[in-house]
Every structure is written in structure tokens, then in C-alpha cells.
Image (tube, rainbow, N blue to C red; front, side, top):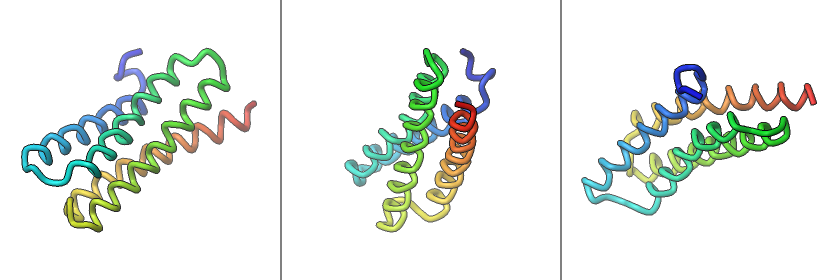
Length: 119
């Protein structure tokens, strides 16, 4: 499936790419690595799980993958808040990332509600 044919997958890919680029900048600046590695893992996992959901073999499989992606978005927001509050990233940068993660979360939650209601 093409990214262009799935807006949620495209948004999650763009989000993951921004996370990767921010991580690369942090590595270059030789700042904190452990917390940012957690952010890298959860922030890129959202799109990976959505990609897996696209290949789901059943409604239950689809719902499970969307659920995992949703939880990864919540974890991503946790790491972003922690990095912001510990002054590893500035408030404006964190706010932008959190807003994008919130947008993804809301879309996925809506999908979960719909798929579980229609079971």
C-alpha cells in the first residue's frame, strides 16, 4: 500500500521521519541518548504498527495493531513531556511533536471505537 493512498499512514511516516531527524540532531550535539532512544523507538513504532495493520488478516488482527500503534503514541507523548520538562528539548519543539502525536492518537482512537463497535 502506498503512503499516498492512506492519510494516517502518511502522517505517521512523516511524524516518524521528524523523530528520526531530531534524534540525529541530538546525537550530533552529543546530548542525552537514553531518553531520546526511547522516543525514537516509540515514535517510529506508531507507523510500523499501522503498516502492519494494513496487512491484517482479520478484523481482530487489524484492531490489535491499531491498538498497539495507539499505545505507542501515548508512550511517545510521555517521553516528549519528560524530555521537555527535563530541558532536553525546548517547549516549542516538544509542543509541536506532542500536537502531532495527539492528532495521530485521536485518529487511531476513532478507528478503534469504530472497529470495536462494528464487531
